[in-house]
Amino acid sequence: MKILRAAIFHTPWNPFIHADALVAHDDGALAIEHGKIADCGDFSAVQKAHPDATVRDLRGGYILPGFIDTHVHFPQIRILGGLGYGLLDWLEQLTLPEEARLADLSYASSIASEFTAALASHGTTTALVFGSHFAGATAALFTAAEQRGLRVFSGLVMADRLLLPELHQIPDAAYRDAKTLMARFGSGRYVVTPRFAFSASEAMLEVCQTLMNEDTGLRFTTHINENGKEIEEVARLFPWAADYLGVYERFGLIGARAVLAHNVHPNGNELERLAVAGASIAHCPCSNAALGSGIFPMRRHIEANVRFALGTDVGGGTGFGMLKESLHSYLMQRVAAQPITLSPARMLYLATRAGAEALGIHDETGDFEKGKAADLVYLRPPEDSVLAGVLRRLEDSDRIVAALFTLAGEESIGEVRVKDHAVIDRRS
Image (cartoon, rainbow, N blue to C red; front, side, top):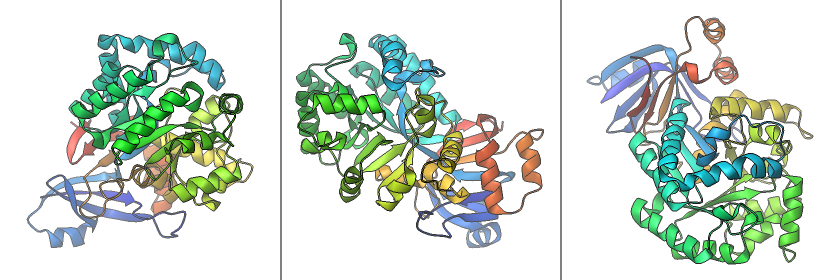
């Protein structure tokens, strides 16, 4: 057993419900054994309980749970920075041509390596990832994640219309490719992933339904209600559906294992049905702003009891940093039509435990409760940085967490561990 000694912050409870959800230990200890949390608390108490443990002194830094990204696109890393577009123009002019390049397995493998390295270097230990339209490229992602030691959930992206022809699949072939990927990498991490209703015919959505019915443990992810023009087009393509959500409901795809990206423009009835189904939303503030999609109606989701977590939405978003994503959520909610203030506890929760809840793995990761995986990020800003100067004069836990989310970036991440396996260690 070993003990990591540093300031520790985590949110074992939902701070949108519980006022005292932020657990802070100024001189904290995280006891780890066999890749799992054995204890977490004040250093003196933990050391007394485990006197034979080896102590690593990391004081001067801050330990947080590993970040969990619930919506990010593996093929889009090299189109980051494509500003000035709306969603559909951005897809047509930047995204789809790049995604078509992943038909080349050598290129796809290099992208998979870059992508998983970027996740790790920004402190993301778990991610729900949109794979590729090509089975070989999606396999390259799973392989790269395994080699890196990251917890990645993903699947073949399925579409058969209104994209570039080279990205279209025949529904039966998409089914076979999905089953092959599940057989190779296991169904526990596989996610049924139609790109969105815009590009998926009824025949393709029936394939998704078949896959979900054949294995009730599979997860489901797609997009919903992101952009006004997209919503109008989906209504035209599916005239029988009462709304966007109704398309997916028709095929039995909405339940507790569904994570839907964006939901910027839901109607009230959709929110009610999402809550009843237990589905979750991946809230992507940077992408919603960059593509001009709108401001996520967080207060309406809270009032309707709809779960949500954070996603970076690379490459519609502006990078892999979950610290930045949480900060942008704070900023946008301050100026929303129905504003809400995100406390430091809420910002931390959205970047960590909320994602675990959305993915149904909150018994495995997301905070530092005993028995969970030792997934963590160690933050220690450079001594000459503005953040270091700010932190030196702070003692209040809320202020410290707020400063980390406001000013910390990749340069402040010293170590990242998944099940206590180091995926990033910049301290040496």
